[in-house]
Amino acid sequence: MTVEHWFWALVTAAVVIWYSTITIFVAIKGIGDIRDMLKKLTRLETEK
Amino acid sequence: MSHFSILDGSIVGLYLLATMLAGIMVRKYVGKVEHFLVAGREMNVFLGIASLAATEFGIVTCMYTAQNGYEMGFSGAVPGILMAAAMAFVGFTGFGVKPLRDSGVMTLPELYQKKFGPRVRWAAGVVIVLGGLLNMGVFLRTGGEFLVVVTGLDVHYLEITMTLLLILVAVYTILGGMLSVLITDFLQFIVMSLGLILVTVLILYHIGWAALVQAVQTHHGAGGFNPLVHPKMGWPYVVFNALLNLAVVLTWQTTIIRLLSAKDTKTGLKIYKGTAFFFVCRFLIPGIWGIAALTTLTPEVVGANTLYAMPKFLSTFVPMGLMGLLVAAMLAADMSTDSSYMLTWGSVIYNDIMAPFRKKAWPEKKGILWNRFIVAFIGIFLLFYGLWYPLKGDLWTYLGVTGTIYLSSMSVLLIACCYWKRANSWGAGAAILFGALIPVGFLVMQQVPATQPLAEKIGPYYSGIAAYIITALAMVIGSLLKPQRKGA
Image 1 (cartoon, rainbow over the protein chains, first blue to last red):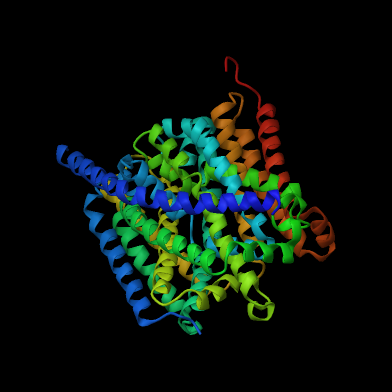
Image 2: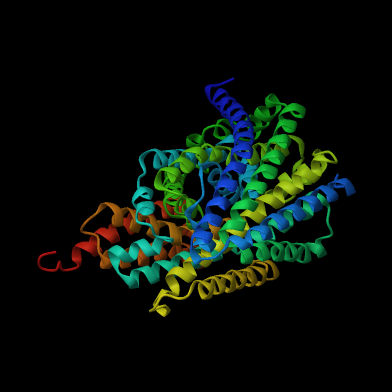
């Protein structure tokens, strides 16, 4: 294995691990973001 | 024979129903134009990451990056690394985008008006919409072709299938604007990511890393791992892609609309930082799929057009059940891109191109109605231009030219607007003109027999680099030529 082979092996491993982690993280935290956004828009609408 | 079964069809149907319902449900929250275009600027970090990632990954992206993997090996994923670096740089420093978000504008040309005047705003709006819409015009057909190959769908149903899909996307985008886009993007990000990760893991498990590396070594040699020694790439490819990706991060309207929809500048920058590494995934994951096609398929099976190598490989490699998730993932990728692009280019038409017609502020209801009409009009344009009118000629050149027309001038304008006091409307006008002339001139040179050899000698990368340099020079020279007002 050359340096380039190792480089792409590491990048591929990082991609699989990072992407799996961020998907779970965003899936959980994103629901909270949606809830907060819609709550805020409702509040602004009723304050008018 | 494709592995697409009734079970897979049911998974896809369920996904489409869930997306449609979620998209339509949020329409009741749209009370103002600002809600429709930038979600009332209430978007937080994780929703922003999901939306940006989902928008910037469509089937057309998957097809070209997989083709890069097939034809250039791992070196084909280098633009993804460059884009991630550009996005991280901008996210950490706030270069260009911090003053943009701080200004409180809804579109890029709106910012330009503050520095260069209303004419430049209008001209910038026209360039953005022309470049963006022409670029987007090819998405629908390419997406349809992918689905036909992967699912084994009769090619005669391509137009009907993609038309129905576009109508579905248009309905929820017209009703809910950016709010529908964000909610559906969130769902689409999850479905898309599941599909992308599972198929990649399956490839790595069944075909194996060593076989993929061996295939790249055999077909491309050292150039398959290092773009600098690849005969078709070299440093001009790397420099051009570095400039192109920095320009995308700074000015591509569908990217910066996330920054402009964020609840504040800090949140916008966090979205950039959080999404940066996704762009490595965006290029490397389909790249690995393309390399897997290179490893397992014979050139006879692939045929003359290597664009179809990856879908041909997936059609027989992915098992039943997972095939449904893959198709749902790809539909998710395409729908999120289409909805966001329709809304984004529509926002520039309403906010900037139509600005001279709104001497007085319009009532919110009238503004929302006009925005809905514009999104519907873009949908109709896409249908006829992109789907029912097959494009002739080289698609990659087409995408590159339409993208560069917009990106070179808009990025130069943004940097000058934010960081150069002396920049003025003459410089901006010259930059817009040269930013369009150079890529179009190169395309014409490629078509005219007398200039073809010269165009080949120059190549697309030197021409692309020249577009950025000459556009920047045009901005400097034009600005310096304009007489300064006394006391200015």
